[in-house]
Image (cartoon, helix red, strand yellow):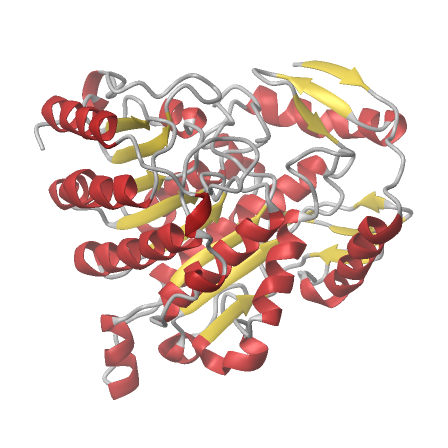
Length: 454
């Protein structure tokens, strides 16, 4: 792993700096993972936890991030009583210390989403037991990460934190380069840990004889990890793109290993191909990876003939959409490809790499998804999980770099999970859309259906 150091970047000025400081203040209580880890002299103090995980305490820009151990009942998963009325469980891991000046994958992203959720009254403060936010969750352990990534990469990144602390931004040249700061390793563990705890939360509830609990079994809560750094480009041997650890891939292995959920169905609707997740499970018959992405976009992988290898042949499906594809294309893909694939595979849980960078306003691609597209996707995937695997479903934030379209689309996804009507018409402007390349879309869908016998 090659490391290149760069000096720290100057702080932003004006309203941008105020925005960050405002949300850093909010994180003081918002992302406390409040257990018995110790913080001394500005250093992390790892402490062994059950299950091989480690915990730490750290203050970043005034934000307290700490963890510890508790005995007895798992303190990280909501009780059955709390989950009974919940329709949505989410966790926030904003990685405020992992940031590079003017980088699109910035530490503005998660605070912008949280601010929108608060403004639109989509938080537990307003909704009560209908929505649960997990404040207490353990970081992923090195063993959790090593279920997907090479240990040499994991240990090398951890050691590189001292260099980053001394020299500022460093680039980790795996297949990237991907930037890192002195907090990147630990904040990436926190992000992966949030996803793991959400898997616990949607799996752990057990049937009850109460009327409320019985109703909840028919309409169980969806999990959403509002986390960064994103993960779907990170390959087993190292980082890539904006990604450090494969959060969805790690959660998939955890679901198998800890909960015995053998068959995992992963949907990736980020505008870029999730090559890291693709590679991690390319020869695995028990994990189905399905990616829709813009044809020709970064990193250039995800062709229709990439279908898996060996025992895993047929459990990888890549559908590259032509530029300009929008709501009609995605609705057709869902009905004609995603649903029959999932029905045939019969998953035990559905995990979703939710990238919001296919939005027509996003600067990094040229699809024509809208806020309404993401509402429909969220609603349909929730129903698919309900139909096929008892509602067990967790979404993971991936891309999305226009803060307005990202926040509005995330909020409308939350409305979909709650069974409420979409407010997309308040945010979407049909006048900026143009005709979708329907012929090209139909051709690629037909080719994929032929290859996979759909």
